[in-house]
Length: 263
Length: 210
Image (cartoon, rainbow over all chains, first blue to last red; front, side, top):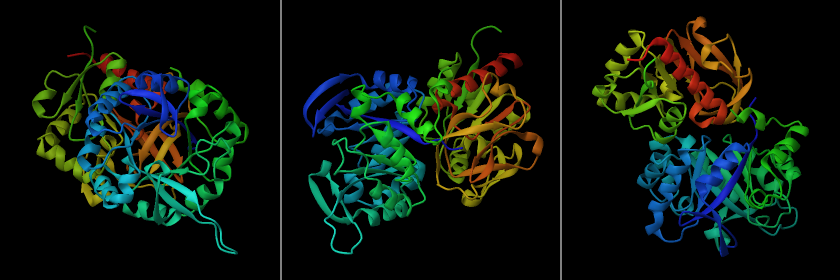
């Protein structure tokens, strides 16, 4: 049976893992390849690197990070941030990534999803959707809008409609982040997740709001997510990946247990 | 045996070559990336990796003059391992793009049936149909990493080694003599995956190193 995945996400800037609040007060947290390998040993089902390097001239640094990580952490690797063309995606995949995640670039140029899926297969194309709740009008259905640039810019896209369209365009997976919950540790927006997961056939990765192992359970059970991504709760060692998987297993969800992953 | 097992990993434009070459090196093999037939000389085994579409994979292999050398290699009974798309193209044909593939095993690659999610992405359990040395020291039902929408349907039942369920069950591992095929990615399946690759390298060494 297909296991529900637990995915730690690492923010990478100029070749180092960084931690900060809203892109401010960034602190150096170590070497990405080393941390990725540690997470892989602890049972991470996949690793996501989010490249938050602002300047384009540092792209080569990220490729080197990917190359070093793929050489020692033998789990799937997704890279998000900064990829804007088929050729840039090819470079990231050739460096050792398995998937590339598109966010702002996909909103700006939706056909990029199609071009990349045609070239590399839809399984390598992840569409990241940052969504924010809209005030609900009387008797109307809850709606969410797509935001970009880390939530600083709004779009006129409805998040559910954009999710459906992104899959039609070629995305093989959706990474759905609730900008209302991100960084708040108040739990995932399961209403948003299930609204998307029940309308698309591709896997949905839940993101934004994890506080503890129980949130991973509700993201899957109520949010219908196939995978759950989190950053700070793992980095700050508040909870281990094993803790999260134990809670998921106790709730009857299929997970890959840590003992299997150790050779 | 004298020296390390020498393995050629076929590069036909399949995206991620780093993981498979490093994983094979991690289990003790000497790895060469082969983008042309001449690079197969002196090798003990071939690994055909890959993700993507069968039709374009065949086009790339043909352009590089690798189709007949791969067929000759397998027909001579020399060790060859196909991973994901590399495994699918071992069969006669693929429904994906209606492609004619290598024809090393009888059967056709078809779309997953009744899959709750597509592509099938993630860690799924591999259930043994018969014991096989490729899965030595691997507990039955261990999770491996999959990422695909198609899988081969072998025409010959005796080629089937293991099955996996996503919607309807499909054949996740097949073997015939020294030819082995895996639908999952051992190079992305952590410790269990490295064990499978170590088993493959061990089988190659047992056949005899060039």
